[in-house]
Length: 316
Image (cartoon, one colour):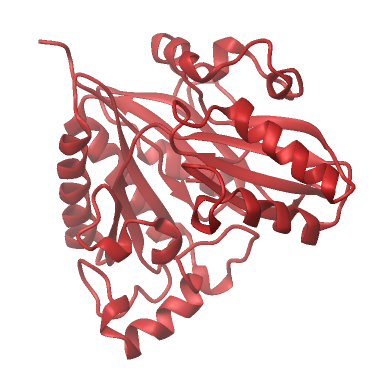
């Protein structure tokens, strides 16, 4: 029987204090878990960790990371351009090999129970792990962000957590735990700082507004430029090249153009389109560090063992 390997991509609401981010990652070190990527972004004030390994070990690693985030991050004084409801904002489990999405749903449910039991942090289940149809979409779960949700749970029973509550944790908010297929996180920078234009493009490509299948998009100002942050949740049905061509066409209508791109976190070989324009525009793309299959063979050292960090952002 093929060894089960699951990926988990926790997103934490801290991207400015390198020591805090490193402490969270270090807390996730568990035997049998490979560290594939970790990153931070100051504008979004968010960090992302990618781990993989045996299901039980990966679950424990993710839960420990949540605990350290609860300890170190206070959302009442945290701000950034990325939506968030929790110090440990989202914890998605992704099947890689020898395991099905349905089994990752069970992992997500187990992780949620441990997070509530150990840390008193309320949990929402999303994507394939959602216990209600209105919580399958992460954007719906995060509506209003920490501040809005903190008020909503007091007034609306429909907004209360799946586990814990009814109120949120006073400083760490809540955690969204889910199961999903592999997601390609792709950021596009434009020759403009006009965020309104990029937000208009984001609205047109988003699945939720009748755009492309399996595409989530957000327009923000990042590193002094207008940035379109994209999550492509089904790259087989909607290749990145199709997303790029659509974005380019819409940008032309708004008298701007994409000038640079970045893949954030890892990408499977199957999603790479070597001769495409979007890949030619990528900044600092290295096969050894960005291709999932290669990183699985040569994982990173955990903090304290000599490897540095990236400084990009994954939106999950």
